[in-house]
Structure formats: structure tokens, C-alpha cells
Length: 280
Image 1 (tube, rainbow, N blue to C red):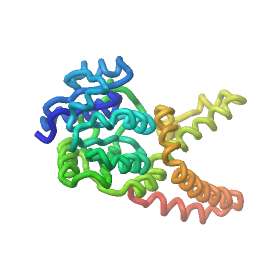
Image 2: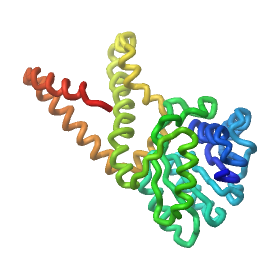
Image 3: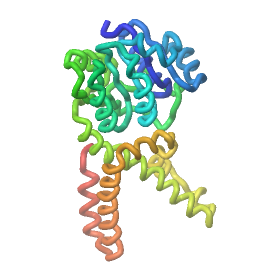
Image 4: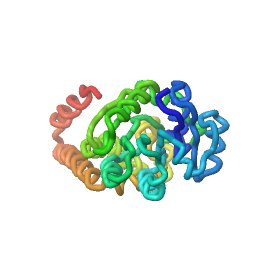
């Protein structure tokens, strides 16, 4: 087995899905769970994702600690609990921002824990343990960031576990992660939210806007159903990169608007042709 006892802190969609996926690998002897939401914890237990509920102090029992909580919550819990972790414990998270949390861990120089920043590029606009799936990570990229104080042996060990749940490890640095995710994840979320807000504003004067919402609009705005508090935390931690992403998007939107005003449809068509052929 790769790990003896794992504690999942946060038994929502991602935390519970990880627990279910780990169960299938049979590479962890015991999985315990902690959540301030007792109902969430009960559901994870009922699903068989965790073997037993835990107290936050049970961090001291684990050789793998996974923070599946909003990024700001992870920071505050870490400050209060890092002293409880055993020497050489592997500590990781699943947050959508990595630079600030990695920086925080690099300040714990007197504590020999192996922090690995983690970000599975998997999930849903749905939340909670009832939407968890053991195969959520299969074929999906799972970003791993090795902190300065992480021993390579423990990094390799956790990477093997991630591979065993069917995910594809991508190893990069924290700054690059946050810069790229501001475009590929955070900007689409913002656009989704504010496209819905645009509709909300317009329907105040004309209810027919709601009657004529089609599948395209619903597909484009699916992300707007995501948990706002989780995203506020991400916006706080990746503010500068997100502002830069918005500026880039505004530049393209302004160029399109100018071409449309000036009836430059050939220029627009050239742009759209290039875009439609771009392989993601």
C-alpha cells in the first residue's frame, strides 16, 4: 500500500470523489473524513467513501492529508493544524489557485511535511457528496506542484496514487499554473456569471428574454450555478492574473465590436475561421 491513513478534509464533490477513487485502488488502508457540515460527512460515510468520521485533531494520525476545502479555508485551517502533522506526512490540496498556498508551505521550514499542490481538472457545477463519482478523475489532467521542502520520494509516491485513479499527472510550477488557469478556468467562470447577469438586467424590462433562452445559452452559462464563495476565494488569490485575463478578453471583444460597427464582415469571418479550426 502507498499510504496507511488518509484524512480528507472537506467531504464535498471533490473530496468524496477522491475518497471513492482511492478506495478502488486499494492503495490506502484507512480513509477518514472531516467536515464542518455534519450532513456532508454523513453522506460521505453512507456512500462508503470514508471509513469513519474524524476530528480535525486526527490530522496527527494521517500519513496523507488532503485539503478539499475552498482555498481561503485551506489557508486558515493549515495555520491552526500544521503543528499536528507527523513528520514526513504528505499534505496536498485540490484548489484552483496554487501560488499563495505553496508560498505558505514554504514558510513552514521547521516542520518536515511534504506539501504537494494539487489541482484536478475535473469537477462539475454541481456540488456535495451526493454528486461524487469514483471515476470523476479518469482520463482527466491532475496538476501537481512540488513545494521547495517536499522530498522527491514522497512526491513520486503521491504521483503514483494519482496515476492509479486514472488521472494524468501534469507537473508544473505554481506561478505558471495560476497564470494559465486564469484564462482556461477563471475567465470562463466570470463570463458565465456575468452573461447571466446581463440577461437578468434585460429581462427586468422584458420577460420575453427568459421565454427565448435556448440550449446554447444554457450550455454557455452552465458554470454560473457554481458555488459563489468558492469562486470569491479564487478571485482573491489570483486577482492580478485574472485582471490580465479580462484585459486580454476585452481587447478581443473590442476588436470584434469595432469590426461589427464598421461592417468589416470579411475580417470577422477570417477571425471566426481561425477560431473554429483551433483544436483544444
